[in-house]
Amino acid sequence: MKNSRQVILEPIVSEKSYALLDQGVYTFRVAKEANKIQIRQAVEEIFKVRVSNVNTLNRKGKKKFDRRSRSTHQRTDTKRAIVTLVGDDRIPLFES
Image (cartoon, rainbow, N blue to C red; front, side, top):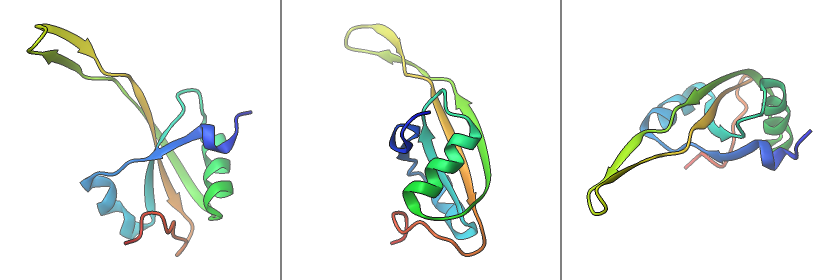
């Protein structure tokens, strides 16, 4: 099993993820091979909160065109976890 910091890579900062903060839902980029149980344990260990639900999604990397070299390249594929916390638990990292 991986270290918790190797499972949770970084928080996702976007308008959509900030809209979900009021409902106690947080979004993270996670390791591709991590499963829901490992993600739940990592969030609970790192942030000292209780997790009620974990949803995951795999995102395919976009193809981008580089005008200067006139070639295309592929962004890396990523895996995201949408984590719902129990009751009024909060992660202070996201609070402003």
